[in-house]
Length: 211
Image (cartoon, rainbow, N blue to C red):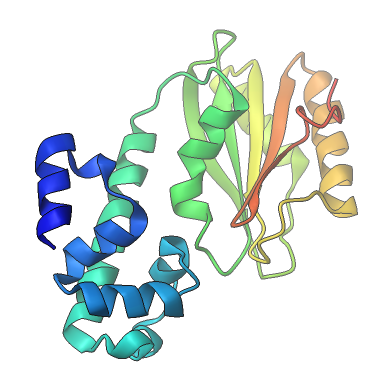
């Protein structure tokens, strides 16, 4: 513990690796090591573990399990608040950072649209559909209608895959083409369709599936 405390004092808390950060939170190096091994050396997996199971990992106990989940939720809320403050989109990675805190941990699928000006300034973020684990129904007419109401000239489609797979399904491809065609009729450009998942993210633009 002293070595970790000294490292933090000298170089800042960001210099600590994941296991050292876990040790600092638990104030018990042996318990942290046991939990680190039991979790497969993944803070992200720990953050998604339900309280009843977490308290059993490495003999953690209820009090320290609650502490860890509170720390994970605190971090998630800070990330979400920071992303909500974003006003201008420069790249598709900006959109992934914007939505990952709220979409990554969901056990159901949600589809959102980011409406933009011609200078990539965000006008509005709107959830257009919410469904189950397998998918969700999106009405492309409502998406274009809202873009016209907002005088948006560009839009980005974002949805999550609760399965964790960062890849486009045939249904995703059909939806993307349908929205791109409908928007183009009104000189509105679909800049990208992004899929956010635990295993990463998928960009139609990056993969060359959008012109």
